[in-house]
Length: 242
Image (cartoon, rainbow, N blue to C red; front, side, top):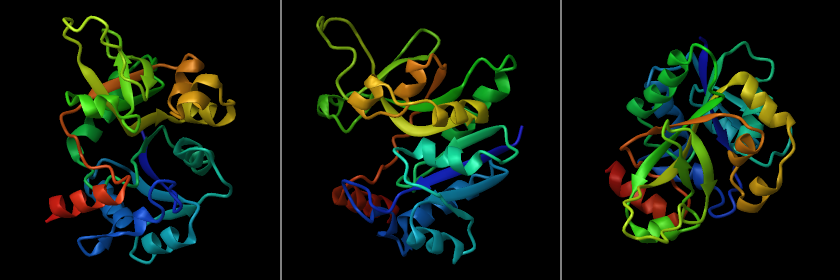
């Protein structure tokens, strides 16, 4: 299998505009993420795909590979799909541009899903992490996922799922981490299919796959990582970097 990584990178993020160009230990956040992804040595190639000339120049001026996406997109998956449509690849792994602490073990687990899926029944795989803090579980910025007994995704939501009506039931809550591995065909299907109401309501792109009966294999990881969504997250990332 030919496996590449794509890092979607919008400059004008709604909650923290320009966050990918913020300094983290002497380099920009997006450059840190790109270099960490390359350094995993898991991929045949790594690209940043962006709508921003600033980000494009930041990567290419430091020896990296970047692609300017041709049009505005609703989500990172659409941006990646445009970039890979005519590439000869099998699997594309979406690494979020605001996660500079990308690490090897979780990405390896995602790739193994497809190596073991000889019948090609899995359309995409993604990561989840066990969470216990109720404030985080209630936080709408934390996307939660529930799975079946084989760890296939049943639903994603910004609400606490499942709702703890019976508090004596020992339910594990899982946070969805926005790292995906797609079969190329499934990603292009996503690109061509219109958004439906559940995705539009929750503003969670992977719900589109469920609405069109795609199979999402969830892989549990212990690595929380740091997603830089706010200036406070950036300060936390700086402390962790030190």
